[in-house]
Every structure is written in C-alpha cells, then in structure tokens.
Length: 394
Ligand code: PLP
Image (cartoon, rainbow, N blue to C red):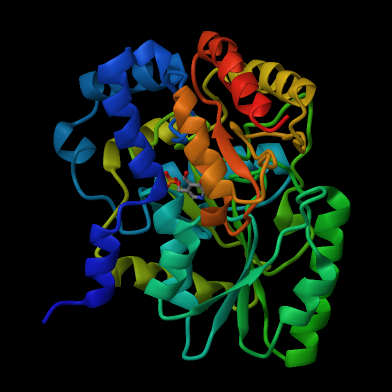
C-alpha cells in the first residue's frame, strides 16, 4: 500500500503542465515563434548583474567547504542579519536575524507555517483567485482550506463573506498581494479593514488568528503602486517571501519566513516553523544562494519589461472588448473569458496557438490567467491571436 493522496499529486498533471506539453508539440509543428505560451510564471528577464558578480566573488574568495557546506537550519547568522538590516532600511522596522528563518523559496516558507501551526480541526482561509498550491500545502499539513469567493469587480476582498467564514477553527488567513493570478495589489483600505476584522475576531475567540502574507511579487509593482507592509497593520502577521521573482531566481530556491517580535508568542511560533522545516527534511536553504540573495537583497531584475508588456496587452485587450481589472504588479493578468465556461474558452484559444490558463483552477471560473513574462515582441505578435479569438464571440 502506498499513500493514495501522494500518488494522486504525483500523477495528475496540472493544467499548466498540460498546456506546456501542448505548446512543445505545437512548436514542433508551426515553429516556436508562432506559439504564444502565456501559461507559466517563469521570470523572463535575467537575474541582475549583482547575482553573477557575487557568485563569482564567493567562488573565488570564500572557503569552499564553508560556501557549499550545511548552514544552521535557520540560515547563516550573518546572512539573516544582512536581510534584517535591508528590511529595516526599507520599512523602518527593528528586525534582527532572530526574526528570520531562511527557506527554499516561498513554497517551503508556506509549508513550514502551515505544518508548524496546524492542530486538529484547524482551518486556513484563502481568497479567490488563489495560487492553487495553497490547497496542496494546507491539506498536506492536515488542515482544511476555506475558500472565499472572489470580488470579481476589483479583486479586493468580499468582507461579508470573509467575516462569515471565520470560526473558532480559523488558525490563519493567507493573503497574496500583488496577486497571482489577478496581478492586483490590495489597497491600504482593504488591509486596514482586514486587520480590524482579524483583531476583533481574535479577541472574540480568545486565540490569535495569524495573517500569513505570501509576497513573492512584493517588488514587482507598476507606476509607483504602493504595497502596504502588513506587519505594520496587524501584529500577528507572518511574512513568507522569496527571491524567485524579484531576482529572477526561481530555480535557486531561496526565501524566508519573517516572524516579527510583535507576533503573539513569537518565539514559540518561530520554534514551530523551524520544527516543521526539520520534520519536512528541509535541513537548510541552499548555502551559496543565501549569501547571494543577502548581498543583492536591495536589488531587482529589470522588472520594467513586465510593465511595458502589461501596458501593451491591457490596452489592446480592452480595445478588443475584453474586461480586465488593471494589474498593479506581478506579470499576470486575469481577464474575464468571453464565454462563461473558461475551460472551453481556453480550449478555443489553442486554435490560435494561444496558451492561457482557465480561472477555474484558481478558484475563479469565468476568467483566464495570462502570464506575460515573455519578450515584448511576442506580446505584440500575439495580439492578432487574441483578436481572432474575440471575433469568434461577436
Ligand atoms: N506563492 C505564489 C503566489 C506564487 O505565485 C509562487 C510561485 O509562482 C509561490 C508562492 C512559490 O514561489 P517559490 O518559487 O518562491 O517557492
């Protein structure tokens, strides 16, 4: 006997994976340049020069036994101090190395939180549209995911539905802003209202409800959009961060959990997160990239390309009659599909070699995710395909 749940996870191909395979097949038939693959959120710009320079310097100057060796489970102490200093400079905080636990990306950071916090019957609230792996991570930790339907007008939060969903079993609430898949950034008003409800409900039930802020896109914002720093609004906030997107390093697996001192029983929460990391066999985050990410913590890849792509695509799609909420950041856009059935719509798009992901998988049917982290010329050439698709509905 094997674990049926794991067999299921290991064998069911994701919709995105299916599209990727389809794209490869079509590329062989019509040429890669004629396939408009907007399915995957893999950064399309190279890591900044700081990454290569630091890597070369580390290889030349650092004792290789240390550079490639295990670090402490929570990450190298100097690295964590450098990251804490960088956060303090940006957000006016007073974090130290003891507030940070380094992980293999945001995915592991989230898993450490869910596994470290979950007790029997616990629930985590997630807002649609959401990153589908949340369900896998939450259920893997033995908790239940409670989904709040989307506010499809603005992709902020439907507070009536949210408040009704909070129960004595609510251990935490996950927010992801800037958001995958909508690209929307939660406004300061949204965050204040969220914090007010969480404070009131925590008092009512006599237990802290943790706010888990999943922020791998924090720096990828457009025309001065401000991303509120959540620990300033709600004390029981835990931040899961990653350099996968901001430094274009998704394959290097570096991120962290930030547990501020203001979190209730913060030392215990830190211990639980570290314990979960240990029980999941994470051992330590990749040593060399701990040093690289710390040295480049204040830098980003050239994310201006994403804004250029967003502007071209948004204008063109709206002119063609698509309804799109303007993204404040990321490299995703989440238009309404031109028929109710988003799966049928995305299937139809394939006729034009347009690979876009149905919203159903993000808990938000009637929409489609476009990942526009591709070269700008490909965005420009894809517009005829979006136009031809739109014409089918006129
Ligand atoms: N959270 C969100 C919203 C994401 O979009 C992703 C990756 O696409 C992750 C977490 C996981 O990122 P990482 O590569 O840091 O594990």
